Image (cartoon, rainbow, N blue to C red; front, side, top):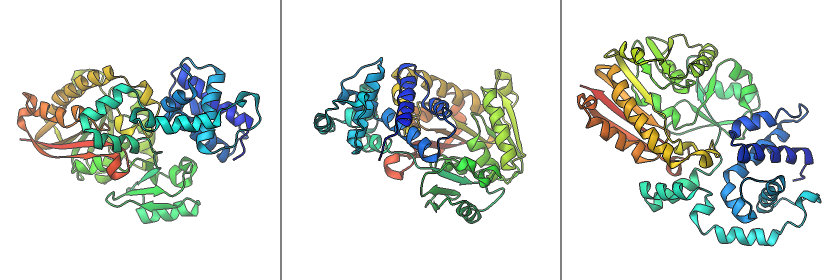
Amino acid sequence: MRLHRNLVFAVIDALGMIFNENEYADKVIEKVLRYDKRWGARDRGFIAETTYDIVRWKRLYTEIAEVNAPYSRQNLFRLFAVWCVLKGIELPDWKQLEETPERRIKGRFDELSKIRKFRESIPDWMDERGAKALGNDLWTKEIAALNAQAEVILRTNTLKTSKEKLRAALKAEEIETETISGVKDALKLVVRKNVFVTQAFKNGLFEVQDASSQLVAPYLEVGPGQRVIDACAGAGGKTLHLASLMENKGQLIAMDIYESKLKKLKVRTRRNGVHNVDTRAIESTKVIKKLYNSADRLLLDAPCSGLGVIRRNPDSKWKLQPEFIDKIKGVQGDILRSYSKMVKPGGKMVYATCSILPEENSEQVQSFLASEEGSNFTFEKEQNIYASEHGFDGFYMALLTKK
C-alpha cells in the first residue's frame, strides 16, 4: 500500500479531535471526509477505517509508542507509525516518520499481547468488571470478538419487498450479499460498501441494522391490529421493524425523551412506507400516565453502557466510565417500574439492552420482578446474545407477561 500524504494528514487531524478534544469518532470522520470533494471511495475508506483502527487499539498503540495524553502532532504520527509497522505497511520517507524503531515496535507488541488488557486495548476497570461479571473464559472470548470490525448487516423492509428481491436489486447495483441463518430478514454485505447511496436505500427497501438488533422486535410477539409502544425509540430502528411485523396495521406509538431523535424517525417512516407510527416526546410523566394499562405490547430498549456494541463505537471504550454504568442502572430500574404500567393485563413486555453485563440485564429483570410494580408480571424467557458465540453485537432481551 502506498501512503498519500493528504490522506494520512486527515487521519492525524481526526485522531487529534477524538483523543485530545474528546469528540465522537463518527462525527469527526464525517467532518474530515468533507475536507476534499475529490477523494474517491477508496480514499475515504482509508481515512475512516484507519482512524477507527487506531482508535480501537489506542491503549495498545500508546503503550508501544510510549506516548501519553494530551497527544502532540508528533505523538499522533508515532501512533500512526505503530499502526503501519503492525500492518506491514512500508513507511514513506517523511520527516514525521523518521527513525521509527520497527524491530522494537514488533518486540513490544509480542510482549504486550500476552496481557489481555493491552492485547484487547481496554481500560483496567473494564477488564476487571468484565471478567468479574462473565468469568475469565467468556470475557476473554467476548472482548476479542467485540474488537473485530463490525460487518454491514441490512434488514429487509418487508412492507416494500422480499429478501430475495432485495438481494437482486442490490446485485444490480453491484452489491453482493449473503443471508444469515436464524435472522429472517437479514442480509450481510460480502464486501463493505456505502449502501446509503444506493437506489434501493432511497426507495426504502432496507435499513442498516445489526443481526442481534433484528432479533428484538420478533421477541415481542407483535401482530397486526395491536397497540404497541416502543418507549425508548430513539431514531427508531426497532420501531420500523415492529411496523413491518405489524404489516402497518394497528397503532405503534414511538416515544423518547429526545424529540430530535423522533424527528429523524419521521423521515425514516416516510422512506420505509410506514404509516401506523405515532411519535410522542416524553416531556413529563403525564405522557406515560395517559397510556397506563393500554398496550398489548411494550418494548423497553433501555439506555445502557453499550458494552455489546463497542465494535461499532470503538471510542466508547475510552469515553465510558464505571460511574456511568452505576448511574444508568438506576435509570434502567426507574424505566422498568414506571413504563411497565403502560402494559394492559394479558399484555407482554420486552426489556432489552445492547449490554453484556448481567447487572444491566438479568439482574435488572429479577430486581423488577421483586418490586411492587413487577409483582403482577410473570417471567417468560430471556436471551443473552454474545458476539463471541453469534458473531454479531452483544445484546440481551427478556420477555415478561402482565397477569
